[in-house]
Length: 63
Image: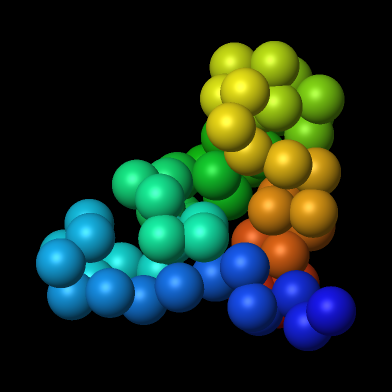
């Protein structure tokens, strides 16, 4: 699986910002949470519809 397959850009979702799997979770918001000190497990606990591979894809996309 290519990690960027989980990152989508749709002008009708979040003003065209890169999001996770077409949901309203912008990549930048997930990165901000990680930068603030949240762990992947913290994020997954708060956002039950996200998967670990989504977070890893977000990091790979940002890199």
